[in-house]
Image 1 (tube, rainbow, N blue to C red):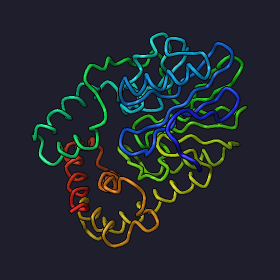
Image 2 (tube, rainbow, N blue to C red; image 1 turned 135 degrees about the horizontal axis):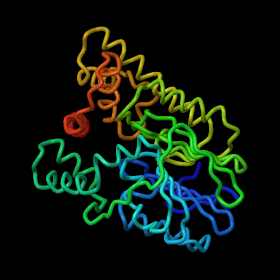
Image 3 (cartoon, helix red, strand yellow; image 1 turned 120 degrees about the horizontal axis):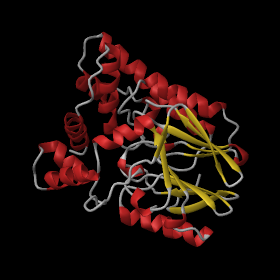
Image 4 (cartoon, rainbow, N blue to C red; image 1 turned 180 degrees about the horizontal axis):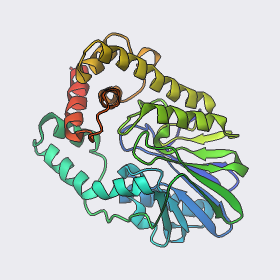
Length: 322
């Protein structure tokens, strides 16, 4: 499918905002419009990017950021929330689990880590963090938290259109949400789908993520807007589910053999264990995925050590580049 940067009209009153190449921070968003009512699916990683998107949406629909009546954050990661402040009049809806997660890590921490990494602090983790997030400006972002939360499913109206918000997390993060527009046969998936890029499993369990993919496959939809990557179809959903099933098997075999998580991740990548997924971008995310799987296998409920995982990803990334 074609994959150009900018606004794509996917149906009557429906739009997707796409950001190639879909790697770290280059996320997608969506807009649902009916009459003077509108629902924005996610904002972007910083204020300038979000302002550009909202300007394009205003040109297409006549509705600017201040006119957006409802904003849904599909999950807590900043590349889907940091532009919330530009939707000053919108009700902001997220799952309760996502809202709690947003409270724990915000744009000011991102700015501090990026600055520390650029200065040489935090070692390989800091260097990697500063490199992958170099295009984005986190300083000065005013966080705007959800004003309404839910658990399970929330059915709402956008004008006369029915929209279902379906919580499928924990999976990618603690509280992932799908946004389903039945009359348009469309679903916005947030980061349940990374298309042509390696998914990253911060939360798990892996079974929940696979079930989320199965839920999308069971929907009567033609248009599927992923959190990262080009517009896709059900074949793209199956590919993500197949990746998750594949790494679950590969990681389990190495866990049972007594291999530690970092060694297992590198062994999967080096031994051809990534199979047909080896060409997907951001291959270093395998170290996070294996670490999450190992904690699931062992019953370890402690939160992941994000700095340690960025260090592992950084070393994987730089080693592959010589």
